[in-house]
Length: 349
Ligand code: NAP
Image 1 (cartoon, rainbow, N blue to C red):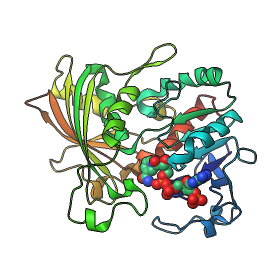
Image 2: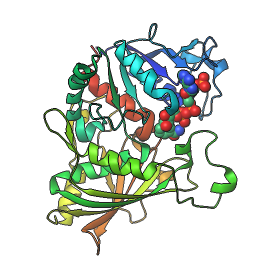
Image 3: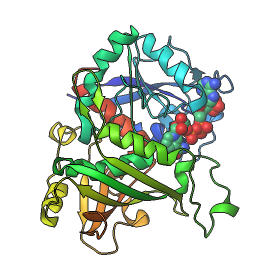
Image 4: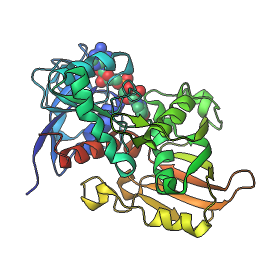
C-alpha cells in the first residue's frame, strides 16, 4: 500500500512552483491539494493565475484549484516552498510555527545552523537537526531545505569521495539559462556568449558544499574542513548545469578507488526505494566527450548526477566533470526527494 499524502505548494504560480506542479503530477505518495501565491493570484483558479512556461500543458489535476493566500490555515501539513526569496523567510517561518512541514527550495534558511540542508544520498543524518530546531524555536512544524542548483551537482559528485578525505576543491560551472528563472537572462546577453558572473552563486556553492559535506556533531553541523573555490558562469544551454571539478585529498587514492566509489555509491534513498530516488545516483560515463547537458541531463528522470573524464590533475590530485539537471535535481525533484526521505524518517506524521 502506498501512502496518500496531501501536499501544498507555496509560490505555486512561479517558475519553480510550476516545476513542483509538474514533478508531483502522478507522484506515488504525494497529491497536490493546495496552492499558495501572492495576493495578486489568490482567489483565482491556478490556470488563470499562472502563465504556464514549461513544456507540455498544465496538469489538469491542478488547473481548477483555487490559489490561496500564503497563510497557514487551510494548507495541508506538508508544503513545498518555491517562494520569492524576498518573502520566503517570514512566510515559511509562519507555516513552521503553525505546525507545517516546510520543504523549501528557497535560499533563505539554508545556512541557518538548525536547518538541514539536504542531499538525501549524501547527508540524510543532518535531519537530526529537526528536533533541535523545533526545541530551539518552539515550533511544532519544521523547515528543511535543498541546496542551490549548482551545489547539488558538486555535492553529489563529491559525496562518494568524502571517505578519501577531501582537502581542497576548485569548481568551475557552466550553468543553464533555465536556472535564472523567467524571463531570465536577456537573449542579447546570452546568445552565443558566456556570462562569467551569477550574483551570489559562488559564495552559495562554497558555503553550502561545506555544510552538506559536513558531519552532524551532536547538536550542530561541523562543516567539512576543506577549502572550496567556485567560478560560476552562465552559458547558452537550456537545461543542465555542468561543473568541472579539481580535488585534492588528504592522501591521494588510486584512480580505480575513485571509480569504484562513484559506481558503488548507494545510500538511504536507494536502500529505501524512495519514489524519486535514482537507482544509481552517480553515473560514471566512459566516453571522453560525456556527460553533455543536452544528451544526459534529463536521463534518470533528471535525478542523477553524471560524471566523466576522471584524470590526474597536475595541480591537485584529480579532475573530472559532473552534470545535473538544474530544475529537477537542482530544485523541485530535490525537495520532493527530501520529503520522501522525511516521510520514511517519520517526520511527516
Ligand atoms: P518566480 O517565478 O518569481 O515566482 C515567485 C513565486 O512567489 C510566485 O508564485 C509568486 O506569486 C510568489 N510570491 C511573490 N510575492 C509573494 C508574496 N508577497 N507572498 C506570497 N507569494 C509571493 O520565482 P522562481 O524563479 O520560481 O523562484 C522561486 C524561489 O526559488 C526563489 O527563492 C529562488 O531563489 C529559488 N530558486 C529558483 C530557481 C530557478 O531556476 N528559477 C532555481 C533555484 C532556486 P505570484 O505569481 O502571485 O506573484
